[in-house]
Image (cartoon, rainbow, N blue to C red; front, side, top):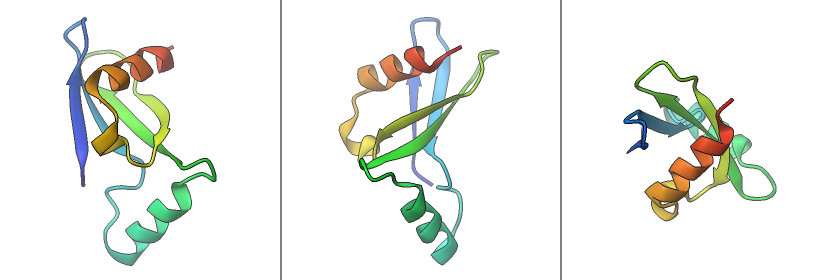
Length: 81
């Protein structure tokens, strides 16, 4: 399972992973395939190290390679309640 960790200005470390990425084999492949929208985005769940709430984001399917840490942190901040 591929994930990214980023730390914000409040010193919270966020662990971000694509939804359904933990599923293995054909079921995981199918779930990942079905989770991609027509716009080419996927749901990414970011979980904080502290007391903040988990944030769900819609990011491009290539977010692991193409989204910078700064962009990811900005998306997390916008998604926080």
